[in-house]
Amino acid sequence: MYRAFFRSMAAAVLLLVLTGCTGISYYAQSLNGHIRMISARQKVERLIDDPSEPSALRAQLELASDIRRFATGELALPDNNSYRVYVDTHRDFVTWAVFAAPEFSLNARSWCFPLYGCVPYRGYFSREAASRFAAGIERQGLDVYISGVTAYSTLGLFSDPLLNTMLRHDETYLAGLVFHELAHQRFYVRGDTAFNEAFAVAVETTGVKKWLRRRHETAALRRYEAGRKREADFLALVAEARNELKAVYGGSGDAEQKRVAKEAVIENLRLRYRRLRDGRWGGYDGYDAWFDSPINNAKLAATGFYNDLAPAFVHLLDVCSGDYPDFYAAVARLGALDRDKRHDALKAAKSCD
Image 1 (cartoon, rainbow, N blue to C red):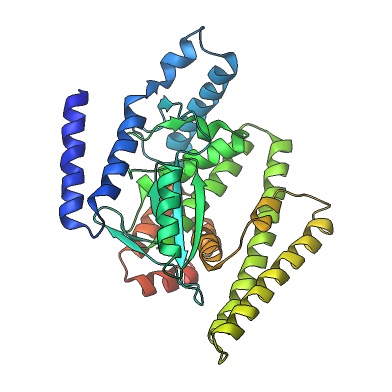
Image 2 (cartoon, helix red, strand yellow):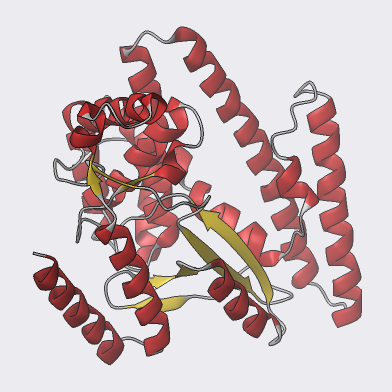
């Protein structure tokens, strides 16, 4: 079975190398990383039934199984073998994504791949490899941001595994990841990251709320909704800073003047965050790490990809009366449009048809 799998993977990678615009070494690390994941997988059901496994792990996997069944039964997400096998990566992140943008632009650089289309990042199974690539493009004068990733999707091409990195937090985090990644399998349009990610975020957030209500976990639902409100506040701060930076970059100043103005906008963003944290948030410091680490165009652009269109997708689900199959059908119709028309039609949607 594994020999056949390796042959099919090798053929797929060869196709990518022959038709893609990225070097063979990049595809080789992707192939090797995914093979390591697949070769270490174990069936979740077997681990749950094995008394020699740690009880905490078995409880987490049982919860994951319930979430997986809910995803198919209540959210109409794909019924396949994804997230029904488990892999312990023995690390905190499964991959690392590298984002890049020019010094005076919020337009992230894209890399193109035959299967996924053009996306604004490159993924690596090795932190060291991601850092080497980031250092190389940073020397070209680009802003660079590296983000650890706890889950990834092959868009249903293979059975995506449940990972130890997905079990690091509470049940809402786990449920959100499973719903998000399965949403990519349900619908994906090549080359439109903002559309794809916002769609998955909408399925994730509405799915988690539905999951918690079904389980009558009122306190957990309140905590989740409070967290979503804080995230909305955070995104509003970032959006304001991005708008200020666009004005700076489009202005008439020279490079040095724009560089100084850019740093001023970023420092003002940090100041506004501290006021929000110590005021409305009552000292909640869950975003401190984001603000304490370097902030640049690549980091600000990456934040927008996942969230800018999400409210429009949630609204579309509402006008579809919360019916997920109807919602997916409406999203598919939008996905068939040209990119600009697709985004405009989504924002203007007033019916499910």
